[in-house]
Image 1 (tube, rainbow, N blue to C red):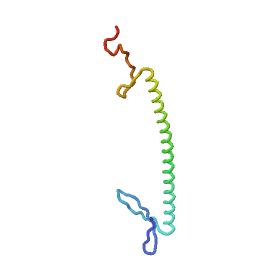
Image 2 (cartoon, rainbow, N blue to C red):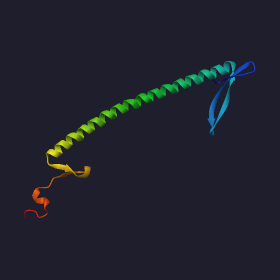
Image 3 (cartoon, one colour):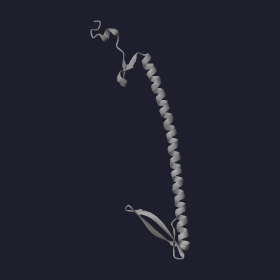
Image 4 (cartoon, rainbow, N blue to C red):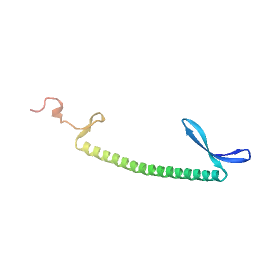
Amino acid sequence: MPWEQRGNQTYYYRSKRVGGRVVKEYLGGGVLGMLAAETDEIEREQRADERAQLQAERDHWADLERSARELDDLADGLAAVELLTAGFHRHDRGTWRRRRDESERDGYGTA
């Protein structure tokens, strides 16, 4: 805890990081220390509430994104079925191409 006993008195300190080191900041003893401790507690609770709200918002967006991804996968599947039935194929998982007729495959054509 930030309260430290020095002799018969207790004093309130706040630890903070300065240049990679942890430094204690004296805030007072008695009434001043109690006010500083209450202020710090209120700020901690506010930060915890903000973190919880941010996490809830992230979870909400993740759910929406998951639904959108599922819809996208379904649309891709339906498009693939339609293209396959229309005579298209995917060469090496690339773009969709129309299948050539047998007469076009030998390279001579019909003309």
